Length: 222
Image (cartoon, rainbow, N blue to C red; front, side):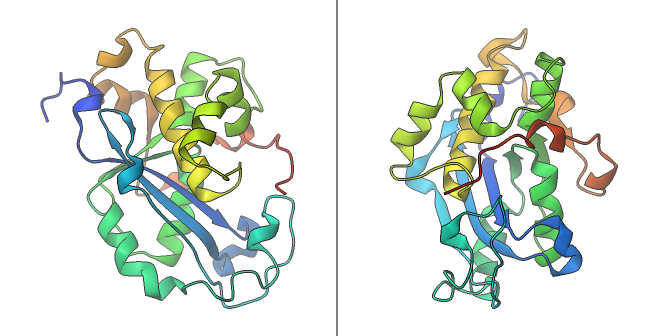
């Protein structure tokens, strides 16, 4: 795609969210749920969206950031990661993956599925820091509320809620479009500019400036 074309013309953008057991598990961290939402003209394409819970093949201890629907033995009937690995690879390999604090999702994804090779990572939290550097501890749900986007997420994900993969992925996609609208180029901002402002390194996301401070304040999921 020509560098001066609007970011909305990109055909390979997908929003991603993973729900996991938590980084305190180290190399034993498990993926509990995943959602991949392609963007069409810069908006979530719900007809092409895909999400799945994943059986971690172990008991999941309740933790504040894990929905009750994903803890305990609730996922025993879900497919194991190996059953959906090919689908995940197909949907993400070669794509530009966007998300809120996407480096966190990418660390877990490459831990569990190192064969997945996206073309790049774009982080809505980085755009927040660029546009509103005074913000210190706002999570995705709070940002969606501030930009009057929560209702739209709920319309697109009926029955969804924060800290579930599809809700968060759709929320990140809508937030991206909203934030880009506040850049000098507005909706016509080139993908090259968006990449410069929001890119996370694929090779070593741990060396990227920490975006977790933007998502620490949250209500425990129900």
